[in-house]
Amino acid sequence: MKRKKVLFVCLGNICRSPSAEAVMKKLVELEDLENLIEVDSAGTINYHEGEPADQRMLKHAEKRGYKLDHLAREFNLKTDFNYSDYIVTMDNNNYYDIVSLDSRNQYSNKIFKLSQFAVDINFEEVPDPYYGGSEGFEIVLDILEDACKGLLEKIKDDIKYNHQE
Ligand code: 4NP
Image 1 (tube, rainbow, N blue to C red):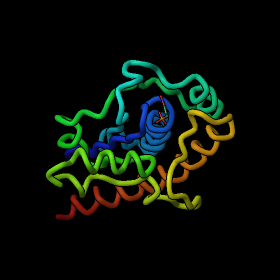
Image 2: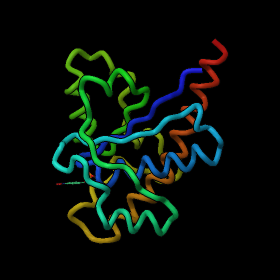
Image 3: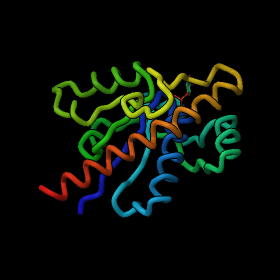
Image 4: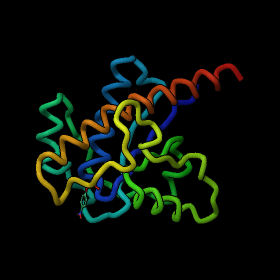
């Protein structure tokens, strides 16, 4: 069966989306679904290209048992739309940036906001923690842990449905 590909997108790809990638990979691993679900992340800007995740984000994530080993990369217009099945953005700016890159409206069914998958924590956007204090990084992780569970359920439903077709 064709693997489902998830691509999390934020601005710099050094705080929110690499953490979402790590949280989601852990959930996928716990359910032994690595052969069915692939997870990556990217940023809408290339400012941090090639850099590891932000040290503060790394530290907070590590405390919860997540190892962030992603190196920042920019969303690739030529390959990412085509390759990915779920392009999951963190805030409204990321969402509209990606929507506007899809200039011919070909991929709108693949573009999501993470907030669509919230389970217990109701939120509109994953707040950018970059210029704030340590509490912001904890809020990011709380939101990611909640909404990635919802996203995984959605993907599992899609896999089941595809399988039946
Ligand atoms: P991220 O956070 O989008 O969650 O990776 C940011 C990283 C870098 C910057 C802003 C937000 N920046 O302005 O460089």
